[in-house]
Amino acid sequence: MRLANATLPDGSKHDIEVSGGRIAVLLPPSLLPLSRGDLDLGGALVLPPLVDGHIHLDKTLLGLPWVPNQATGNRVADRIEAERTVRAARTVPESETGANLVRQVIASGTLHMRSHVDIDNQLGLKNLHEILKVRERFRDLVTIQIVAFPQSGILRSPGTAELLDAAIAEGADLLGGLDPVGIDGDLDGHLDPVFAIADRRGVGIDIHLHDGGEGGLAQIHAIAERTRAAGLQGKVAVSHAFALGSVPTELAERTADLLAETGVAIMSHGPGGATIPPLKLLRAHGVRVFGGSDNIRDAWSPFGNGDMLERAMMIGYRANFRHDEELALAFDMVTKTAADVLDIAGYGIAVGRPADFVVVEAGSLAEAVATRPRRKLVIKAGRIVARDGVLVS
Image 1 (cartoon, rainbow, N blue to C red):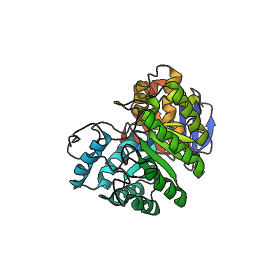
Image 2 (image 1 turned 120 degrees about the horizontal axis):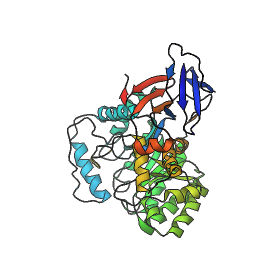
Image 3 (image 1 turned 90 degrees about the vertical axis):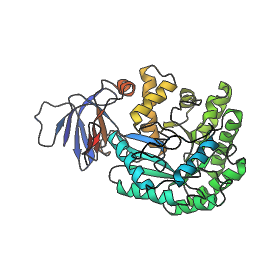
Image 4 (image 1 turned 30 degrees about the horizontal axis):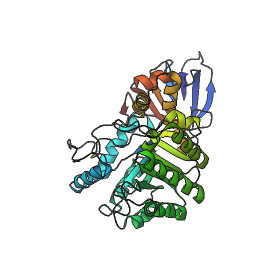
């Protein structure tokens, strides 16, 4: 199969020869006639697959009748309690709504994701089992990395530490955490079991941290120091990290140096109502910064659609990115760096790598981020799986 007249993200023009589901050759554009099964892309932009570094497949209510947000306040704790009420009333399994969301994100070009899955003393491992079904169902189309996530806290939800350990044994890939001080009120009491289980099970960690200011910054420092002590460099991420955007620049710079030294990555979804980490500062100091959708049509937020090209635009908008090189940084957050954090082997457009592509009508990478064109084609292992934003099958 030949994808003729493709424009790569760097602006170069190529024909892409695909064999056995992989990129066989990158050739200069040819005037040779197309053979059966070849595609003339007409100069369209060919991107690597999008990567969602932070999604909640088990939370989504996509496909169900509209559920109004029931949180009575704007604190994380208020949203947690409201969600416990909503999920207790659910009659449709998370495997069904999660599948609705997976189909939608594949059609938009996302072929890799990291999903946090709620584990607590109300749910037990139910949500994990449901999302494991989703992962198996779509295993030929998308990779789904699962984080065992203590959404209700660990100390506030007795028995959750044991459930987190069991979740790893039953198929989760990483350990999660949530606001050790803001939710559990005990930094060490929360982090001790997270790092102990990760060490015993040999897995990475991805911790939600909404707490802001210098208190939140102190928790980031504690996570980084524990990462160093545990030998988990490169295997730990802090999601949201609002504190980095709410402290003086010199404090953020010192923290960035520590994060780079310990290999702790930072995830941002371009939050609408909270401070955004200083993305360019973090990158300049060597921190891996990646992106994710976060909540999509669930008890936490009525917004979101799982389109990571749109998410890159939102990140750029919130970060006041205006130049092409800045838009390229936003794109990198939902492609190359996200793939690196998720440790996806063979990612990118190069000979020998999987023939996974997203094709859009745009004149440049920056234009694609700014305008979020419909996905003309989504190709997985050399096979078209979506056309014009709709799954082929």
